[in-house]
Amino acid sequence: MTRTRFVLLTILALVATACGAGGGPAGGTTGGATGAPHAGQHGGLHGTSTAAPAAAPARSGERFVTLAMPEPYMPKPPNGGTDEYRCFLVDPKVTEPDTFLTGTRFTAQNGEVVHHAILFRVDADQVAAVRAYDAKQPGPGWGCFGDAGVGDADWIGHWAPGTSEVLLDPKLGYPMAAGSALIMQVHYSTLALGDRPAGSDRSSVRLRLASGKLTPLRTQLFMAPIELPCTPQEKGALCEREAAIADVGRRFSTDAKELTSQLVTWCSGGKPAPGPTQHCDMPVQKPATLHALAGHMHLLGRSIKVELNPGRPGARTLLDVPRYDFDNQALRPLAEPVKVGPGDTIRTTCTHDASLRARLPLLRDLPPRYVVWGEGTQDEMCLGIAVAS
View 1 (spheres, rainbow, N blue to C red):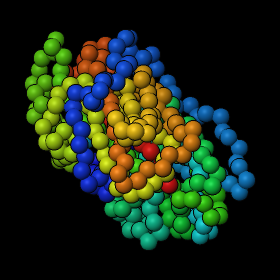
View 2: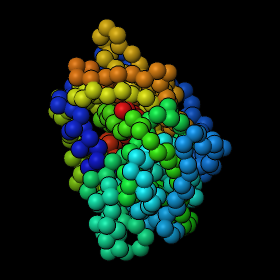
View 3: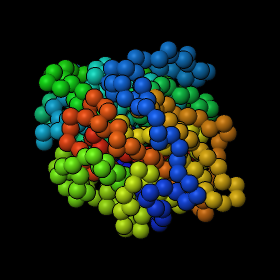
């Protein structure tokens, strides 16, 4: 989902130290790691779940604003890869001072190539600079691997397959000050196309805006490393960890290589622990109230879990997806909001299955690889996404 520089800054802001271990959490492993590939996840990747769901009506005090990319864009993945991150400035023309974003409904116009999308908020005093930067770039938008690509911008919404608009308490919302705008970051993946041309895309998003004195929301991210070796049946140069990391850096940037190193430092005491299940413990640094969570992995993902204070009195599971499906990454509201603060720990645990690579049409013709954290569809992630106030 998910942005590397943005994620690094988020972790540094939230975590002083993070201790965990590769190869599974203490006291057991996450279930769901056996059986046939999940039909939705492994049946297609694109074009199977991008139809817009039925729209919920506006609630009291809400209004809708629909924004589309300024013009169609034809994806052009760089460096011989199959992934491109492109950002587009869209302006909801907010004029009222107390305006909040209470819901988003993203529509992927070209479902064959849109992997996911993230909305970033740009404050009013930065909009002119973003427009100037956009105008200097060739073609619509600009390349933005890792984050919004233009300085500070806050994550305030996202879409991935299976995600529809999730409405929380109408008293909650992401602040949208007068004059602020949005950056729509779209991850394009051409992996499923083979030799076919990508075709253009002009995706859109419907914003649900409300005015008043709402409780501000923010997005918090909880990560764990990926250290997934090739299976015993697989051979190849990219089955060597360092070669695989270098390949991620070539396809994206040095930031991608640095993230793998940072995750190992924070989560595994500086020593990678190869295995299908990894976890990371992140101490909470600031008080927050959690309202909803989602999990994000790619095609080798089997399960993801986010826990509060595991192994301690009062421990609880915040998110548990024992059979992860790439085509169903919906945000899941908590039954009741959960307050966290200093002294609490959030643990994110993911299980991946390298044997799926030989069974998935999208991956089976690619060279086998030691899988680390990466932004491409052939790479992997372990990311818990929380909506908090």
